Image (cartoon, rainbow, N blue to C red; front, top):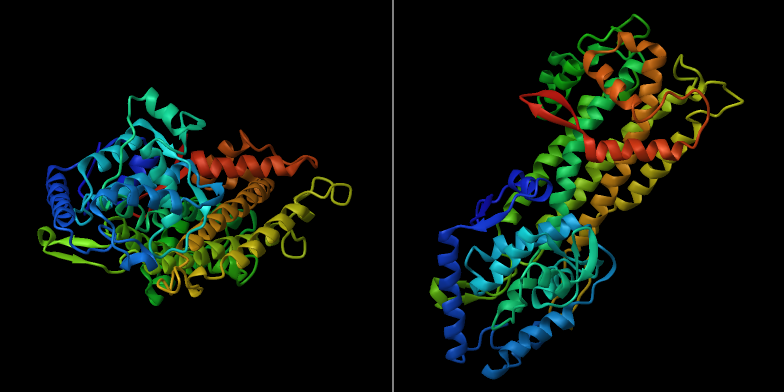
Length: 507
């Protein structure tokens, strides 16, 4: 079980909730804070104080006062009117992350919602009821208003959810689990949708997948080194210590460990004096990506524990302030940075694929073909990789440099962070496909050079890989092979660190 406090949620805990199905609960201290802030809201309503979103309208309507008897209608109208999302739904796991993150933010005790609202969020997580949330429609400031409105609808018994592998009406799933719809009262609709949980949830899934992919890229690159008889000297620790970046030093060390015992790698001068940059600069380029991953993880963990709605309630209601914590700029920057960093992993991978298939750049059969000329081999796999990296270049254009005014210019600067997070995730998906192609080509090249001479780690990967992707003896529909390799990378083939070692786990 993971206990939410509003302040201590980590990416490692999110991984357990999202991928291991851990249930969630709230700490006693967080419930006390929730109760205190709720009393403050009720007092504000009772006293008819003018407080944004509690006794007033929203956005440009902030100067419209709402009568006490209409506060429930105000909150329901807010959810209905803001549920304008369009396009394909976020992956179900992203919806699950949104539920957890929204509950954690409300448990900080600055939002003024009742305990029952947060309990409903936690119940959905623990029962595996995940709202269907369209991906498009958020500006990333004033919170992820549209996506979070769709997240809230099922709490009220409306909208659709993912439940036990199906997409069903929310009420159907709730009735099977004995969950009843709630009715929102003062402040609660606003508190639920004024936040950055859509972009942050997408970012959490993205960075967890990206980190795994970064480790996988090193192992695949190591196999490519063997297929091309790469020069191991470029990974000498003194070279990387001389520059000083910790991430670069660690990548070089892992590359040395991955290739330890290999008879296929060479020394300077044995076959050539220097390798091309796509081999020689693996620690520098991959290491720079790790720098970005560390930055992004830091920002996400801050945002995961942030109060991002508006207004915020302090000192038992004595201080209620309308601020701008819903503005997604920090995560927008982080998501753009993440997309750029993973795009580079794909870029350098595609260049290694070219070196594996181009007969002018290696001593392997042209395009790794069994019968060059009659059969094209991996020729068009490189085309596919080139297309994917070019697509990534367009997706990597930063969303965070854009803004557009909304709500009659009251909300005149927005982050576009949710767009950035979606683009980053698509880049990660494309990069995985590129690395899947490199894996296929690297296995073919290394086996042609002699699998008995591979390092123990890469040989084990080759053995497991051949259970899924046969040796290329003749042309076949390689799209199927790419799909199998991609699925292997995403779901089964994992690499976890122990100090700086890369351990290979086969599921």
